[in-house]
Structure formats: C-alpha cells, structure tokens
Image 1 (cartoon, rainbow, N blue to C red):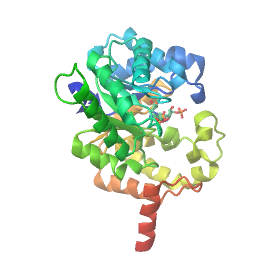
Image 2 (cartoon, rainbow, N blue to C red):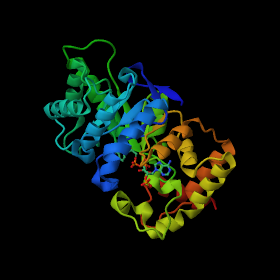
Image 3 (cartoon, helix red, strand yellow):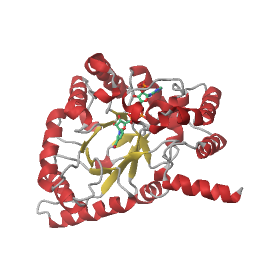
Length: 341
Ligand SMILES: NC(=O)c1ccc[n+]([C@@H]2O[C@H](COP(=O)([O-])OP(=O)(O)OC[C@H]3O[C@@H](n4cnc5c(N)ncnc54)[C@H](OP(=O)(O)O)[C@@H]3O)[C@@H](O)[C@H]2O)c1
C-alpha cells in the first residue's frame, strides 16, 4: 500500500474503502452482505494496510456508519492510525445543525472523534460561514479531526476555506495553526474527468486532497457490464449504464482489458491506477465482496507506463456518451479536438 500524508499528520492510504454499499437498499446487496460480508470487507481492508474509510450519515440512513463502526471496533486494529471520514447531509447546514449531526455520526460509528468530517454537497441557500462555524466548534472540542467538503466547485471550496479561517479567528478555544478545508470528495474516473480542470491543480499546489468517489464508475470500468445486461438499483439511475452508452464505452473497456492483460491484472485495477496517477488523488472504491476489495487495494501498487496512461486518456477522450451527460470541460475538450482535426 502507498500512502499520502493526511490531515492531523496521519498516513492516508491511496486506496481507501467507500461504504455507501453498507446498509443501502439502492445497491441491493441484501441482508447477508450487511451482516457478514461488510464486516469481512472491513477486516480484510485493515489487514491490507488501508487507513481511509469513508461513510456518510445519509448512507442507509445511518446504517452504513453503524456497520462500519461495529466492524472497526471488532477488529484489533489501532483505530488511532485510521482516518474515519463521514459526511453531514447539508439539508439546513447551520452551525447548530452541523454540531448536532456530528454527535449523531460519532455515536453511530462508536468513535470519540471523526477524523475527517465532510459537507456532503454545497447548499445553494445556506452559505459556508455558518456551516464552518459549526465545523470550527467541532474542531475546538476535538469531536472532529479535520474538515473536508464534497461535490464542491473550486470557488466554493475556496469560500469554505475562507469561512473556516474566519470561524477560527473568532473562536475562543483555538490553538495551533488555522485549519483549512483539507479535501474535496468528488466523482473522478476515466468517464468523469471534470476535476482535472481546476480541483486537481489546486489540490496539488495547496497540499490538499481530492478524494475520488465512484472511481470505477459504479462498476462500469470493471468491464463486467454490457448493453445486454438488465441493471437495477443505483446503476439503473446512472446514464453510463444506458445500453447506448454501454456500447459507446466498449473501446475504452477494450483498452482497459488490453493493458490489464499485459500486467496480468484486472481492468478495474488499471482504471484505479489511472486515477491514482495524480499525486493529490486518493480513491475510495466500494466493494461487493472481499475479493473485489483485495483487488482494489492491490491497484495502489500498480505502476502504469506513460504510454499506457496516454492510451487510457485518449480512449477516455474518445468515449462519447450519447445522452447529453458530457460535462462542460469534456465538451470544450472535444470542441478543441474537432477544430484541430
Ligand atoms: N460524496 C459523494 O457524493 C459520493 C457519491 C458516490 C459515492 N461516494 C463514496 O464513494 C464510494 C465509491 O463510489 P461508488 O460506490 O459510487 O462507485 P465505485 O467505487 O466506482 O463502484 C463500486 C462498485 O463497483 C463494483 N466493483 C468494485 N470493485 C470491483 C472490482 N475489483 N472488480 C469488479 N467490480 C468491482 C462493485 O459493484 P458490483 O459487484 O455490484 O458490480 C461495487 O459496488 C462510495 O462507497 C461512497 O463511500 C461518495
């Protein structure tokens, strides 16, 4: 396993474990998964040197936090070495609400401190100053170790940073350096590359982290799914799994398969290694089995050559989802390519 230096000086594994799957009906893994497999996944994850665990109060309406917390407590791992991250769902994220929600998450997790507490997405009405006053209050009492955001634009990330700094300057309990918003958890994979435009350069230059969620595009990049598959749950709502887009992604999946074959690894591992080529990125794939988890963890040590990375990036550029889900940076990149050719 490879690590980056994280908030509060802890080592963050480049591959962490995403736990939206735990206790969540939308993934459809069922009772046995929640009762047995999820715990086994956490146990094996710890044995493999993973230190980053991501959950959220909204996942399974608290069940994910409970399942993760129980599994961590049952293990004999040194919990002080881990970075347990959760998220507040920002329905009305005023300072008192943020404080109260963190108490609930810590209690479900059974931890004295949530190492990284993230705002799940930016609220268009409630701005960051009140949210960050809540975060600062939580830092003051040690209930959280560091502050992160998720699904934030760069402007909003910077605004959250300023708000946290302001809250720090007004706090009576502060000690040490002013805190920053250490991370932004965003979707990042071969089929979703928006963070490259501005979040990744910012994270690299400021010593922050981009935590890549859905790094396997919810399983698409494993190559297991094709246009003939009937998909349910989260994948039924994901445009990349529409039959036309599954067909359009075939060349990208073939590139993944070719490179995987030459390294004797799996396409999903190549997809993760491509995501991890950027030093400011850590990835948090979810897993439906211990075997998947093991495979994902091994990807942290997979080095791809420059020519392979280039081939993947070019195959990603050529993937044109046909449902209008192309993002603005993708559209601009394609317009630029079209003008060149
Ligand atoms: N902040 C946010 O708004 C946000 C949003 C989404 C997710 N997240 C976080 O990010 C985590 C990961 O994202 P995600 O769960 O959406 O997508 P993901 O990690 O891209 O995909 C996970 C799914 O891919 C399949 N898979 C995983 N490893 C595999 C392997 N080695 N080989 C083959 N298939 C494999 C499994 O599904 P099957 O076995 O069923 O095919 C698994 O459930 C979540 O658990 C959550 O913690 C955060």
